[in-house]
Image (cartoon, rainbow, N blue to C red; front, side):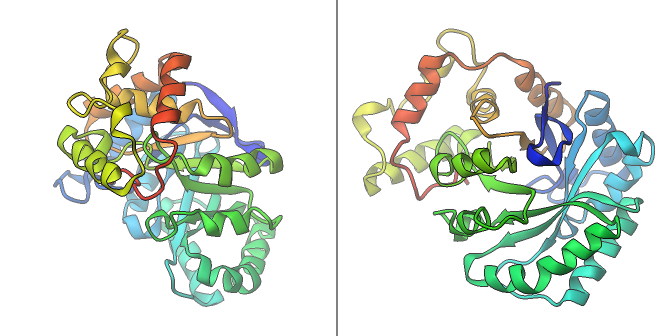
Length: 312
């Protein structure tokens, strides 16, 4: 598994991160997986060379991750967890309690990255002025190693919160929505993150539109109707078929992960699943070489005007 240095944190992280949220939540959301099966899935990822795990109190998977990590060397694993916010405000006491409860569930006395989760632009100033100083205090106490912030992409398609956050020299790591359908973060977020040496985690590299052909077709039809996609530049019967014509991409999902992995400024691409075979397939994708330059250039051109779709 390829590793990278997570910006100014200096942490050595696997380019594929195990995401414990999303539609699967390690099998604890829609599918009725036993706890033991979910723990085994985390161990499979760790044993394959993935050392970055992302979770959140809202996902209800911290306990599972804690039980898996307890069976391996904690010092070699990077744990990222989050306090959910949305458009609401919480108190300093609520944040401290949230962190303490996360640490208890994770069976650790520190978290490598602690994020404000889904922070929206309208409440950013409150969190910067009222909550971030507490996070810095907790960092000095050794409970948090690095501070992070994640966006609420569906409510903030222009990445406005992260654009603001990157102006403040407090966040070590950010989580941003980016995929081959919607590449707006390239100029608005990633270019600034590179300049400031901020660690970048990618969420939504693969969503339903990139894993289900019927959903992709509906998404493309909508984008054409909105004027964000030129129908003359894409074959709607085989919209991304060119990716596999030379045999260098297995399918759209494989290409989508590799497209994000090799975007400048990206350190970790999150991938979630509830299925061991699916996990193995995703790991294999991250081990494959870069997409041919002509494919990357074509994807950048076709979707250059897309701003409204996130791939969901």
